[in-house]
Amino acid sequence: MSTHEHEKKDLISTPVAILLGSLIIALGLFAGLMFSDRRSSNTGNTQDKWANAVKAVDINKKKFDQCLASGKYAAKVTNDLQSGQGAGVSGTPSSFVIAPNGTQYRIAGAQPVDVVKALIEKALRGEPSTDAQVTLPPITEQDYILGDKNATITIVEYSDLECPFCVRFHATQEAIMEEYAGQVRWVHRHFPLDFHKNAKEYAYAAECAGEIGGNDAFWNMIDYIFKNQPLS
Figure: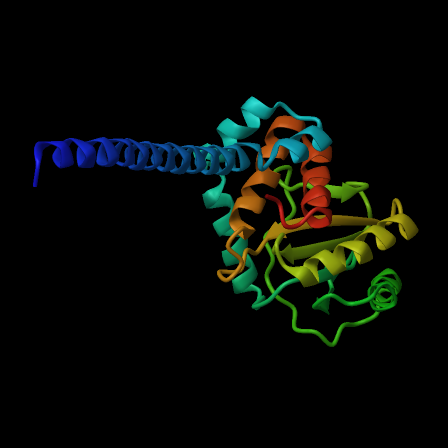
């Protein structure tokens, strides 16, 4: 091949090589930017997952984040779970209407308002119960209570905050507390089920809200979680 032909070939191949190299660099930069954006987006979602909830409940975000990250309420949630298991709870929601004399009436599952009302009326009249009487941890100052703390009727609910049936029963709770204002107090106990991946985190979030903002913040966080799932 002549020197002229070699020079001509080099003139053709050099621009092609430059073009290919530029395309490779551009593709690499584009892929890097896409990965960076995706990673930033995922990190932002993780950091901001609770932003709207904290704003709605009106508690300090920094304190909430620190509390949630600490895992400090894992033992309390586990204790609730174990106390429920000891009382024969195996699914959620599972609740107990407790009369002034201590008699228990079992609410199995997400029962409608009329069923719960019928049990409350039995408790108010002091009628005997056909349900097995179990040992429940006593109500203490450490419990979060919805309603009048001195109400004569107590409902203890074991609940999973990611459970769709518990979401449904939450509406029942709201109706009952409105109709029996001053007569019924509602106590929440945590019962996160293993197959609900967010249930424990939701429980910790409610506890952290209660720590920071008190009783109202605890119940407001539960209300927010139930009405805004899935949180992301």
